[in-house]
Image (cartoon, rainbow, N blue to C red; front, side, top):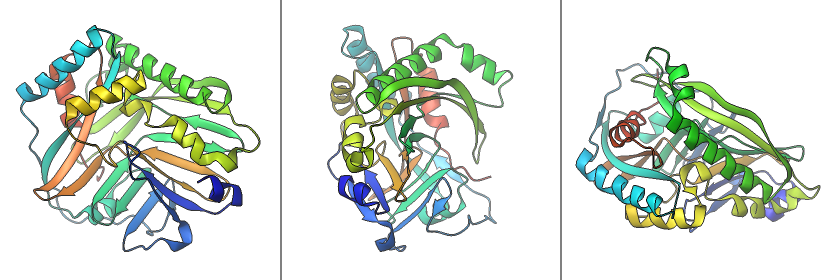
Amino acid sequence: MNSWGEAGIPFLFIIDFELNKPLIFKLDEIDKNKILYSINGFTNSGTKTKIHKQITLAKHPEKFEDYLVKLNRIQEEIAIGNSYLLNLTCSTPIELNLTLMEVFLMSNSRYRIWFDDEFVCFSPEIFVTIRDGIIRSYPMKGTIDATIKDAEKIILNDYKEKAEHNTIVDLIRNDLSLVSSGVRVERFRYPEIIETNEKRLLQVSSEICGDLDKNYLSHLGDIFYSLLPAGSVSGAPKRKTTEIIAATEGSDRGYYTGVAGIFDGQYLDSFVLIRFIEKSDAGLIYRSGGGITSLSDPLSEYKEMIDKIYVPIV
């Protein structure tokens, strides 16, 4: 990333959550039979395909009692000060009458990627953009069913959601200060609507930015290494929280909750690998989760994890 950024060579990158198996490809060398992407309008896949059949998506989430064991463990860690926000994720077997490629081709999402029929991601969350020496991040925290009466008012005034969002904004401000100067919050807790095959969801984001030094293109890789893993899908403090995540979830996340993005030779756009379906020996697995704090209501968190299992096809 450093050398290709300095040389202005366009590339695509995919970085896993554990930083064990990052991938980078020159755009003109990508095999469309292996990787398809659509990143904020920059794509190698043509136009979005329309669907002509009823989508069926069956979810088989873990039992609430099993989820509660993990959540209680996390809240014990929070109570003794080892973390104050942790993103707990779950793996849910699903049955879907679409292939991973069909999900990619039909999804209505700003950020999409299909990787060698191993996984598909249709993410609503920007990680960072870099343009004209300014780096911007858009952490997303807070989800509610948009069809609920006064949904926007409810989520914006919810004390737990406010506290969680404030924590993430502070974390991202600190992260950006590692790689840039003049860090500032330009938009705070603004709502966005996401259309899914089941319902409309409302999610809350903020926009934070900073000024990079004049030679930033020559250290794009260093910038990402300093910022990862993404704060919105790990927690705070980051190092200890990721240790708790590994112990609680019991297996590597891999590319789920990592980041992917594109550099066109001048500008960089990237996204968090959430809303993620992967293929396993046992069938399709949907990965989803949410932020846990001392104020979390277990049943609400469990329902949010399940609500995030959808495909954005309407």
